[in-house]
Length: 407
Image 1 (cartoon, rainbow, N blue to C red):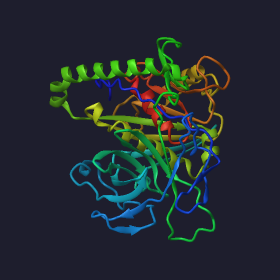
Image 2: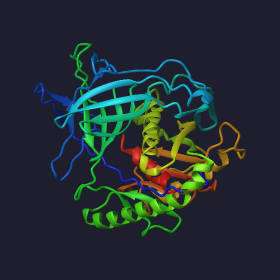
Image 3: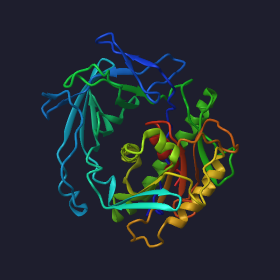
Image 4: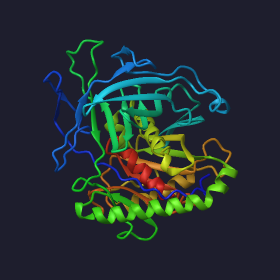
């Protein structure tokens, strides 16, 4: 459904490293952080511990309890006419007050969303939609004199990203001490997606790959100037292209849809837990949706999940290896065979996304710093409308968005 979409934005991503503990400035305590929450940079920057609170629309304190689920289901045809209410949160970060105004992402899941568990010859399919998307939210973030976008899941604390003029920031719960009583502030960690010199962690592999693929890889700082020049060209290219097409776009539609199938491999399931992996995928795809709602893209692009496949064992015809090119080729052929040809079939997808804990590497069958790989201009070709992504915690959302940006 995206064959006419002209979206060449490429998104850089932040690579997360391990940090053992964070410091709570308010109490002097040491708070344990999970290994996906810390990061290291040459500038010495570190994650900040914050204590969000839930507030009312007029800014009054409501609760230290942060988890929130919107109730009820919204019929797809009424979604744009009857938006649900908002939920508000407030936190203090870098000496300023930050406020989230969030509402349910009613476009996250198809009304005929399918969860499929595959274990070799034993497969189980679950049709229909529960309240799985009731806590995955989109909205705005406000700080003094500035405003940005946010994609936050509130299923169990706050988890996602928000953007301000100075950049993107991730937020997720810190590991609360077992001795903490209920009703006390819930510590969260906030860390930036780094884009400054000596912190940049993204590089296009177009020059080193065949013309048919593009990937994301950890990069040395001396690529900064090349990145800046390329991104400036992309901005100018998109601006001119948007001006030429603006009249046509207005006459057709202001909204676009990318019906997506996500596949999680057994390593990802083992890492996040079989009971948690579906919610984790929802969180990541909600963030991807938030990225594509950025005003710089122009038309609203809705990334909608129609099918999630959990691979609980070896899958015939699918080879997931360190060699990213081999994995991409295998995955693309495999997903094409699963994709119903009819565009009206509820399980039909425009794009297939593999998220794996396998350490992939472009061009080599050994671990390295490649984080994602996709075909260039493959969205309109069923056998090339696919990408693979190495899970890195919340930043993997930007890897997925980057690879989707190659269409």
